[in-house]
Image (cartoon, rainbow, N blue to C red; front, side):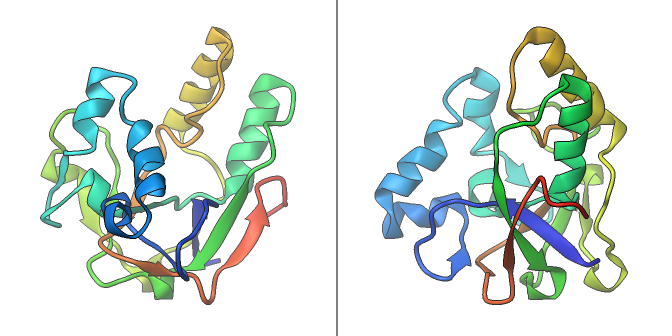
Length: 181
């Protein structure tokens, strides 16, 4: 399986675009996208964090998950003991990603800190295989969320596939995360 995933959001056009592009094409969508970065000082710095090798900031890329959403759903259900709320995702063929796409696996730096160049690697569609299990760091995060009695941030501890521009959805399909792999 050679797919990456993006949680379904309202679209303007037929492609996913970086949040920064929304400022001119969908001001209300831009405001919603930027509002999620206002809750902590670390997240406030995050939107201006530069991605090494891309000459783009956090808000100037499209975030995609290399992990099948069902793996996250399954882990959440196992850890919490009940199903998370329904969510839909675009399942996007990796061959549709723009040139220059990279993988960010943030293991050295913390949210809001400058990203270390060692955490970013080129994305290679021919050798990519969709992950069907969550990384240990994501499982630990989900367990901590359950201990604290909160939900959300389901993708913390999962590497990000970062596209430096629009991601067309013409060949994508919509799936629910409860749908088996």
